[in-house]
Image (cartoon, rainbow, N blue to C red; front, side, top):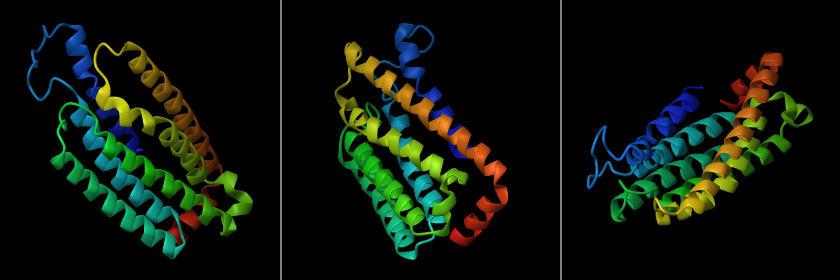
Length: 204
């Protein structure tokens, strides 16, 4: 829940650039500064989200080989993204497409490992009772559909109306799907709280 709230606040705060632009910078003039665009916010979110998903799936998955793979991927991916930010231009201007690609691939791999771990565990016969299953389905769909858009977001300009509307629409639909599945997952986890706590303890 803390991660969801943090993501929401970061996403909401990142809209400052569009609001200032639409207001013709009457409230605060950040033109020709590093804060004119809000890409830097999403670049920070990218690093934090990789670390969060690494922590989450490292705790959720019980297979030791998968856990080690997740740990290596998470550390390597976070470091690679930091290197990309420091070796390429535009950290303050646009979301780094290469870093978004790294994050998307890592998260999708986490989801696949989670499904494989689920199929080889006792949880498989009652998979629909676990929050992790719904959450994994949600972020799998989210990153599968939004990663290509973030990769090409560096080519976005204020005049690219069609692309921006497509990006907004896809992200909104994916958000609805993701958070709807999370709500269902929470309700199911509350209904079967003892079972969720049991396997969470074993995975940890």
